[in-house]
Length: 250
Image 1 (cartoon, rainbow, N blue to C red):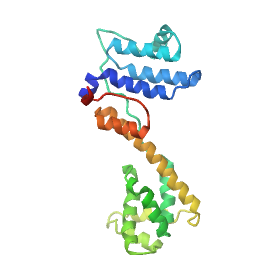
Image 2 (image 1 turned 120 degrees about the vertical axis):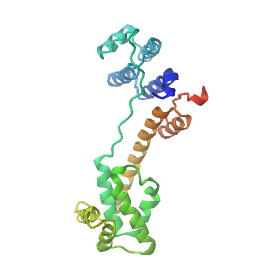
Image 3 (image 1 turned 135 degrees about the vertical axis):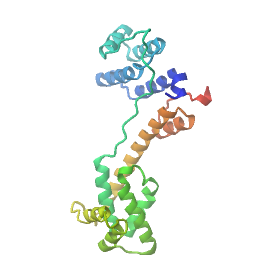
Image 4 (image 1 turned 90 degrees about the vertical axis):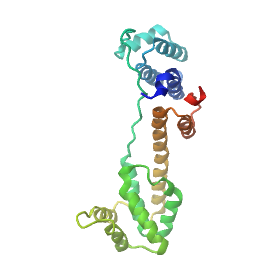
């Protein structure tokens, strides 16, 4: 574990407690159970009885239930506290980072639109050009788009043959994956390149998901490093009014 989690355990859990509380809706049973479970999952790894008791007390106050009831529920999640055999402190669990299928579909549609329209390509670059490299699973899309950028810098129009030639230039004698990829894009019958609203919807889909992905990656970085810069970056992206002290602030 890094020194941050070893020396500032309570601050870390307070931060996670506040995050969980933000989504709590008082009086809603489903929200109550979710809030309770998140707190339990976060404090279960603590080796300090004072940490556990502190947050059980806070949770009881926020949920307006007895501490005894929460201790009983806490036992149901197979937690057994033994002061002589403490559970090793570990960093809070990272959130999964995965590109959803709808993003691949959106890029398929956008690529086909941009083959036939320089204006749409320029619009794409102005809105998403700085966010191309959101994930390595999209590398082939990004590589083709960068090659298209070079092509459109010198030409006003592109057709299917031009696009396929761009793809061929990325392949070698033993591997034709880019040409096969480009052929699939061209043969896609699911979209209509004359439909501007379709193009804009796909732009919005990627833009919204990029924000979600950035928030997840920022969160994972913040809980891993405990660095003040990373923490503030996450708080800025998530717009959560939560606070966690970094080593520099101690």
